Image (cartoon, rainbow, N blue to C red):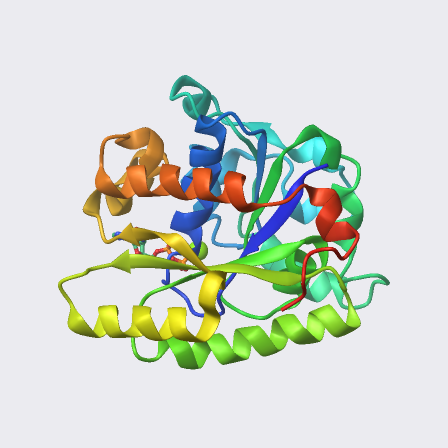
Length: 272
Ligand code: ADP
Ligand code: MG
């Protein structure tokens, strides 16, 4: 059974998509079977995995509206397979922006993704969900489907403030919709150790959240920012780059630390 994690933070531009595609590639590289789901109508995680969002016949939109199954709508990213990091993609494009409105009147509207994923859970070790920068019905579908949330964050002053809102949302979803949901961990991204403030915020994070802060730190690295224009995760585009190596290290940390999916479902892993 797959461990299902959302990559979420309601702020935009904090590194959610970069984390999702590079963690997916890193996990695949160390032998894990991965499904990456793009829940953002911008489709950046789709494009960044080498899939042209405009060419997709079926996307996560069709899955949410129950006109297609995950097995029908997922695609294999050939460029990633060539790069030794093959993972499956359930893509998104602009059509997904309409799902929000179309789903409002439907029943079980927060649980559509969760229901759809149940059919393919056994085929993967990890399912990673790239969430949009909002706490919308789309994000709610991700949170209801997941065992936990990985929160990428920059070590800046306002980062801590934003975190409070996200933690409160996760607590509410935990209480009302998904009793398994928990914070898996905080991932420090775009980190520059030369900036004193970043070091201070990093220390504050560790003081507040303890071992919920992942050991791996993702450095600011231009190769990670260049990779999407080639339709590749940095891990495939330039495996030797510092940022790529950090994501492979993060994938290994996750594989080592995470208990089997059954431990999440049985409540053996502590909630937030
Ligand atoms: P989000 O999905 O949260 O909006 P993105 O992953 O798209 O954030 O990242 C925002 C911008 O920052 C993108 O241009 C991306 O290429 C860049 N970026 C993300 N992580 C890094 C990093 N570690 N080093 C350099 N640039 C990064
Ligand atoms: Mg994004």
